[in-house]
Length: 154
Ligand code: HEC
Image: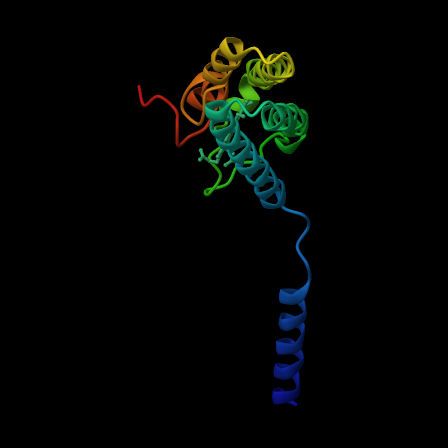
């Protein structure tokens, strides 16, 4: 009797451990990290393309960034923080400011695509600089305020 009860308890315990937990913010965090990594790839491709004035690649990759910026905000639902995530809680305190950074990056990427279409080399170089990267320019502007790894330490 005792052993039967014990094994019943064990079975229940095993069941409760197997029950799936509700969707965690972790999922959304992974999605936005993936998206950010693709933005990083696009920026690297843009820099390489700017060296050779590869107008087609510049256009395609700039449009990619515009698209990515359009997908970024929904991947930051309120309170989606974790130990591993680099998202700073200020994001939800200063949501308007946060969203302005995506607008800014999109605007630069749009201008870059136009400059590439017009084969305007000087403008291309200017916009590539304005776009920046992880710690500079338009991308970096958001990171310096809201990405824990890249925030100003003062
Ligand atoms: C609106 C703000 C915002 C903009 C704009 C933005 N990022 Fe991010 N980025 C973040 C945040 C916040 C994280 C941290 C996400 C997490 O870990 O949950 C991040 C993480 C990253 C990461 C991975 C972590 C790291 O710091 O190495 C890369 C790579 C990255 N971003 C690249 C870019 C590039 C390239 C651009 C511009 C095309 C860009 N980001 C524009 C907010 C932004």
